[in-house]
Picture 1 (cartoon, rainbow, N blue to C red):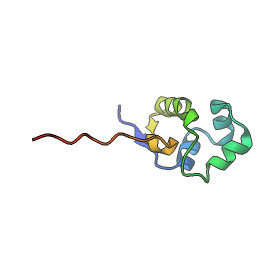
Picture 2: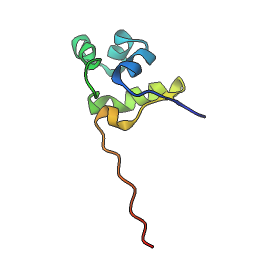
Picture 3: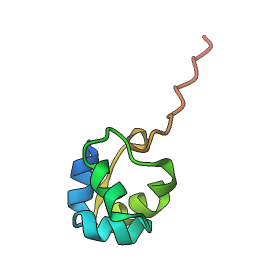
Length: 78
């Protein structure tokens, strides 16, 4: 399955139905969720719930949107 890749917090929130559904999905306060639209990242503790919900609708987003570091590829020894 190929996932559509979302690049911003706002795109992720829109894909998940907006502020209300994201509030319920993440068990967060409405004011916090509202603020996330203007932030470059989500709180890392929302990753599992949100990425699972995105995958269920054929979408994904890079872990960096949750402030997670992705390991760099190891150098090849030649």
